[in-house]
Length: 236
Image (cartoon, rainbow, N blue to C red):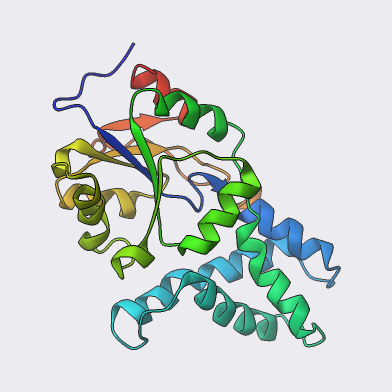
């Protein structure tokens, strides 16, 4: 049965890394294929751990506006050094950095998006740059009504300019935009702007050895096990 929301959302904006795609499993696979003699899962976690500190340097003004592709490369060079890996060629490093363009969608995503698009306008809202997302969604066979990025607004989430930017693009009130994400900080940022929030359980986002607590929180409008469950709750 559909969950009544007043007003109902008109636009569903989706976080991507972790919510739509399995970054940990995909990066671990790519690192493992290089046979570097390290734990691929730990390397993936270390690479991702540099993500928020790198964005914080941009948000603080220490760095000028920098695309996620370039931040990923900065972090990669640091992590390679930390793991004592010095024999990769520049071509290999470039290919590995583009692994973020080749992340596998979670199994429920393609069908879930198809169902949700029957009733709602569906867009991405990722810190990932536009070129990264275009490659990523083509790789995963995912269909959107629009791809939106922090690159468009020159602000990374959870800056309010990102969430309100979506509302401006579609000319809707904040209450008509629902952020769909597997991260509570992202959802809190959207709610602070007057937008709605739907939490998606991704207990294995950080791999099987670091399962996430996906306990429901009352601040969110909806809590779903996956996108198919979200579609059901929204009457799709």
